[in-house]
Structures are given as structure tokens and as C-alpha cells.
Length: 407
Image 1 (cartoon, one colour):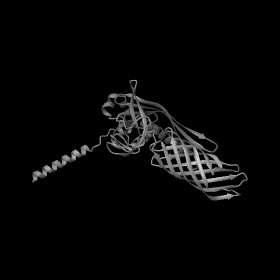
Image 2 (cartoon, one colour):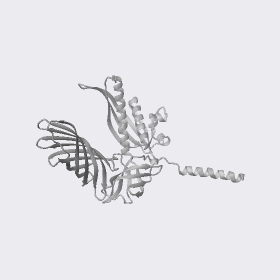
Image 3 (cartoon, rainbow, N blue to C red):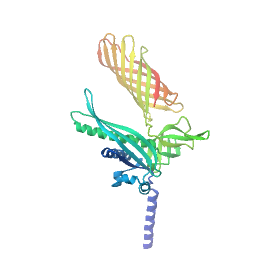
Image 4 (tube, one colour):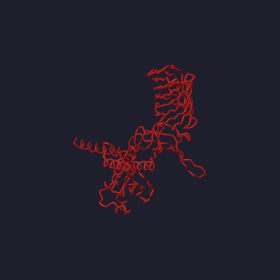
């Protein structure tokens, strides 16, 4: 009985160890050693801001010279063999603070400090010593002097703002330089499964695009298109939602993979310029800007100016609607409502202000990814807020038609 018990314990320990090894995540994220030279106080600020920014993203492993607890890192960095043998880092982010200076600026009403930092940024691959990125950049920070902020405090804030802006710039450049690539392992409806997750630095909300390599005259080139967002992320794989499919190639091709693109946005901006008509009497022009969140929700603001022989109308509206994506054609259909105000001014100095509710239906047809035509119809319900003089404004039909730009 004792032998069976001991054997069971050993088997249990073995299975636990086996399970823990199989579930262990191998950290394959790129690693950076951040090193600044020049103005020590500014350099320390930039190092800390940059480290905080990169660690918050979760995409990289980061060390600064302070983390290494070395008394003379500069001398160590001169010894390439030491770096290769002792620093398990992929890249050196070398920041030279060339110049930093404050300027006290004044206008008739305001006084402020503007702090500037001129820095040279180099990214070096430690294993080979290759300089893969080099750029000179000027960063600035501004802080205004007021009754509650002293001259010294304002200078302090402008200095830290300039250092933080430099760190943000470097973080953005690193994200552009080191994009995550992953293979597609499965496609399901509007989702794709990829073979990368937290182990390479993918985090929820990251943006990706489809990529395929094509050969032309013996040379290979990459086609990019579409838009995806990381919706679920696990240790070694992720689930991406397709927001847009590529127009220039078939993303179902087995050679297609996904590539991180931090410049993509999880929303679409819609801008419209249109002709407007109310009651088949008043004509005018309007402008609208809105946001499509890819989840059928549209929100926007519009400004419309209408004219007839005796009056000038100005409308300011907030639009909220359900956006239906028509898959067979690159078009959309919206059911929504406008909530806003209408101001009416007559030639005899009479005027009125109305609260307005307008149910609308809207159709957009896109000839390309960015350009299309727009048609909208609705009915205005007006509720008087203020009326001065003899103003005759009634509930009436409205129609709009124009061009749409989508980004």
C-alpha cells in the first residue's frame, strides 16, 4: 500500500511538472536597452518616460542603464564583446541629448515657457552592431504662467513636457520600425485566428492588416490591405476581427499573413459636403463630420445653411444612427435621428430659435475606399424656443445629396 501511495505521489508530481512546462509561455518579445548621453537630468527623464510608455504597451522588454546597476555603462558599451556575452538584449536605443534650452515667450495677454530638446536617436542591433535607425529630432514642451502657477513651476512643467514628448516620439518610431507579423491558422466568418499572442507582445486592441507577397518580373513585392483588430489575446495565439477586407487581393489566399500597423484606426471618419433642401422651397449647403465604429453605430455633427427670398436658416445637429453595411456592394444604409437647433432670421429683423428632431434615412454608395455619393431624406419636427416678430416655420420634409469622404 505504501509503495502504491509513493508511486502515486511521484506520478502526480511528474504530471504537474509536465503540465506546467506545456503551459509555460516563452517570451519572444523584442528587448531594448535604453541609453542616453548628454544632459543627464533630461536624459534620465527621457529614459524613464520611454520605459514607462513601452512597458505600458506590453509589446517589448525594456531595460535602462539604471536597471543594470553598472557604475560605468558607457565604458562597457565600448566593448562590443561584453555586450554580446552579458546583455541578453536585442537592440540598443541610443539617445544623444545634443542641446536643451528654455525660452520665455510673451504675447499681449499670455506669458509662457517653451522648452526645446534636440536629440539624435539611433537604434542598433546588438548582435551585429548594425545601425538600423538614425534620426535627428526636436521636441518641445509648453507651459503657461498664470495666477496659480509660478514662473519656476511653469519652467519645470515645460521641461518635463518636452522630455515626455520626445519619449512619445521615440516610442511611436519604434512601433513603426518593429511590427509584429503572424501567420493565419484559421478563418471563421469575420474573424481570423493567428499563431501569436502575448508571447510576442500582442495586446487587445492592436491593429493589423493583411499582407501577401507577389512576384513581378522576378522580383517580389508586398501588397497591403484591409484592417483587423485584436479582439481576444491568449498566451500563444490571438483572435482578430476583420473590420475591412482588402480591395486589391483575396485575403482567403493561403499565402496571406497579418502584419501589425499602428497607424490604423479602429474607427472610420466620415466627412460630407452636400446640397440641402427643405420643403422644396429653401435651398442651401451643409457640412457633416462623423464616426463609424465598425459596430453599426454612427455618430456625427452637421452644420447647414438654408436660404430663400426672405429668410436665412442655420441648423446645428447631432446625428445618431444604426449603420447597416451592405456586403454585396460597397455601400451603407442608415436609420437615425437628428437632434439639434434651427435658427431663422428674416429680412424684416424677425427671428426665431427652434429645437429640432428629425428622423432620417440615408444611403451611401462608395466608388473607392475613400470616395462616395450620399443621399438623405427626413422630416423636421420643430419646437419653438423663442420667436420674435412674424416668422412662419413649420414641420417639413428635408432632403440632402452630396459627396462623402471616408478615412
